[in-house]
Amino acid sequence: MTALEYRIHVEEPSLFDVENSIEKVIVGAAEKMAGVPRSQMIIEAPDLFSLSEALVNSYGYDDNVFVVDIDVDGLKTRLETAGIELWESERPEFLIWATEERGLERLMIGQEPNRIIERLMAASKRFGVPMQRPLMDLEDTLALSPAEIWGEFAGAVNNASSRYGIKRVLVVGDRPERQSMKYWLFEPNGGFRSGELSGTDADQRANELIVLVMQYARSISDDVRKSPVVVARTAEPSVSFQPQIQDVVGQWTVRVEYTEVIRLMELIDHIEASEALAIHATEIRANDATIILKTDLSLGVTDDLVSAFPALQFISPLVYLLK
Image (cartoon, rainbow, N blue to C red; front, side):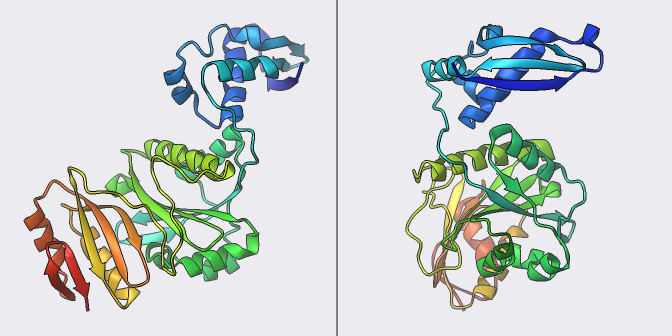
């Protein structure tokens, strides 16, 4: 029988809730074994954590410490019976860079307190996926700027990250005033995936990001290229490597041929400046780009807003040549 010991510091044993604490320990162990939050697991198996004490070999106090000895094999069996797959392969490590949009400024997040980063680091321990923050010393500050992140200059991100020797890089661009967050997941081959998440507060946006990152980490850990949020494909000689999404209700797909990436970034800024349009995802290749827009506007009105950018040459609705 395999056992695992958890130790909880207790200030006042007479006020300590033993039953609730045992359940929290079992839930924590299950989340780490599966890499899945409790809320998601109980959707599949509502009674998964009932009678949690049955999964405990022993428990008791050692001075001011509550010690719980978990029956690991029993917990694994319960998870497998519930159809929850264990995450037994090696887990990837991530380096995390972060920026925040404050009014008209975009600033790097250093070592100061930040709710998004704090939640990510807590998730690192919770799910057993190693995460590290950059030092944000002078070398980091000179190596990478918010403009390079938001401009999606993959080379700058990869060069700045190389000193840490971590293969996977997560970059966060939080937009509190817009109640949204941009993210970029950089891969060892130099390509990256990106997308945008929404949430009314930092906790909601962090929750969405954590679920996405755990799904991504699991997919690459198991060497299975699949995810409900992003879809990988063979990298091309391109600036970015991002999800392909089909046209659906509430979305329009903009296709642009370009020669200078700086002009493309200016077009993206032009689109983002419109309150009626939101960029859901982008795919940027060597000479053309696809931009997925979320909007309630008609095709004609959307085309008018996008084509108001002066350097665009109209080819057909939502298809342009960027001069």
